[in-house]
View (cartoon, rainbow, N blue to C red):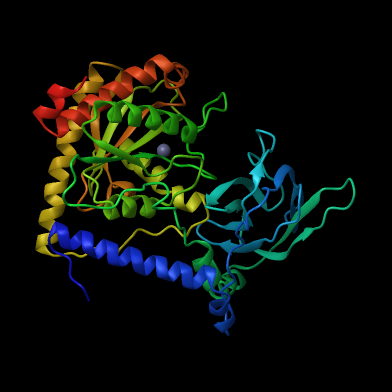
Length: 432
Ligand SMILES: [Zn+2]
């Protein structure tokens, strides 16, 4: 086993792991020989767009009862699909090549029969996904696409029937390889990030991480405003502001409405050996009077119960998109790694303090604005990482701010100033 001790070695190891992951992806998803070579529980590669116009999904419905439930999606063209079930919680994943979803705004909010609700969106490059939440273990009885006939659109149909927990488990075993292949996400590094890691960078490199994306919408305001859109807009403005200083380079984990697994975001930060990672989110809570900005850093023990609950919610992002929710346990535990981690946490806290100072002068903060909990996205051991919840979409006043251009300008400026201070006085002084 290769051991990773120093920062340089850790980065090298990350690169080796990335190459191995990419090789696995190519082997699993692109080579038909791989699928053919499987004799038992063969892996079926997920459908991927082959170029050409993207089919449009313009209507969907759920019909049936608790014995048999049918999910139907109307499409402008035939597509290939894949489908499998997932447990903990019970879900059905339908994989499609990239589809433009032009569905009614309330699509998926409610279900029927065995389906309690569902979500949809871009899952990875050239791939869309629909995830159905079910009330109990179900079996996919049929999954097919009816070709378009004259005025009738093409129709994706998935029939679900109830099953026993034992049968459900047996099915999970059979589809393990397909799930592995389907859930391997090439998040498009290179074309999104376009910057090679280098120890001799002229400028510090900051990675901005707009939370959620694709079929994981994050929090939703009463008005229908989505967290994934709010935080992307904020991150773009912040990127522009930081780049305008000419003092730092900036990359983003996503620049469009796509899903990126949490561990992929961490991997991107490590592969690029970024100097600072800032994850941007907007919270929501049942207590609609709660409002203000909060800054979070990583800790094993949460600073308070609200922070613990929030981390659990944010950590569920992968599960929402139909990934098996598991923490990345690929962590080397030894004394040198612990030292790196400790040093990183000191830097993360220093940046969090800068943020609180700058933001407190600019916008309303919640009580005790620097909090901590076990956020997976902050777990890069060698990258100072902070998560900012810029406000609450569940609060009407905060929602007004979060959607206001003036507020976005002001607050992104404050975050920009905190970044400049983090990299030292010469940066702070030169910030225009
Ligand atoms: Zn979030």
